Image (cartoon, rainbow over all chains, first blue to last red; front, side, top):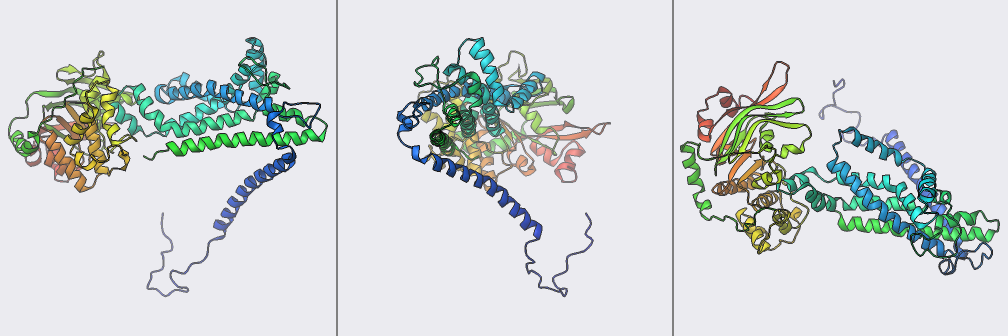
Length: 301
Length: 290
């Protein structure tokens, strides 16, 4: 770089005081405004949506929602107990299937797999692509192979396996990021003391990666909890009882909300809004747990 | 997993005799019992030959310094001694490295056992994000040792590393709260706790201030009574101050313009610094080259 115009020397006569501010250039300000605007769009939409749902569902946000079973005949006594219970069952087993599998797969890819081998690269590309597959496709897979192929029917087992497959790529990707963020010097320090690779992973890498893994896991489950499409594909619909096991038929909150919105009577619209608020509260609760775990276990290097 | 010998070889005489030992060994011939020996050692990363044809002998309970300009393969050679180069994809070793006469790279060698006997201290202090106590106890624990009292093991290791008095009241606190120099002494203590007989140090003072550096150097002289220490350093005064023998490495540029590290000479430190046999050594030490 050549300097064509040297800075004026402090002693030379100037047309303005040497250190006087000339104000922020326009493009600096314009860029800042753009950032504010984009953030405002996102935030405002969310606030409007939340307010709308709460106001619309306010009259039905009471204990009936939790104590009563759904009904397509009597909106004033209808509740969402079976849907709430179904969602809790579904999330529990989705987590049981997807978290250990996803975290162990991430450990393999990061700590054991040789990234130069073609099959490891193939797995990696596959996982990235799977994360982008629409959820309805997982619904078709669940219907064809798990519900009908294995004969499990529209049960908690089928639903949770389908959702677990849906969120597995997210768990793997988030866990890999967390594992990769653990400094190499920690692994070297452990191995140099005569620790085996598994001891190094189990005692050093995993504990240090927990905050990131927990965040990813909750994000994945947050995605699963709101999914209606794959469950509808599986034939999950209206039931008036709580699940009592893996082979029990069930309904889930998103499915229940969807079926209420298709009812003609406006009372069901109110019910759908109220049930959406319940779903949102469950979601927020899960995210709070993630933040708590992260703050509790975060380390600095 | 391995034999359980919790009693650490604590020697009080090491401290007082350190300076005298150093002078004496500088005057005697360096060829006592060789703990680590390399013959015709070459290290490759893929097809690139990083270091070629190195022959070295590391005498028992001596401090050997490896000096030379950046990129001459000192650290590469050092990391072969405890097979840390195995962790780098594509790294390959030709020639032989023996530890007490046994080939370190033989097929039936357990790398875990190599690393336990040949400890390592890294350039940047890398304490685990655990308590001071757990940092020291980690090595004995992962090696599955049955010890009568882990507290004693921790105290002995910290005492040997001259850190006990500074941390004895905060053993349960995070090791990351220590200063850089304390962290590095903790790493040395952690290494001592698994009872190696060789300690490799890869520029252990590179990130430390002069006071912390001088504490580490004092510690090295103390430990030399019981351990064979091999140190890579960019600091020539440090090599002159602490080592009994010095190896000078440099990099040759071949016909294709590729740099290959090689050993120029290895001798008593006093000889290397006052009367080196190779003009390149003299040039480097007097600052004309490198």
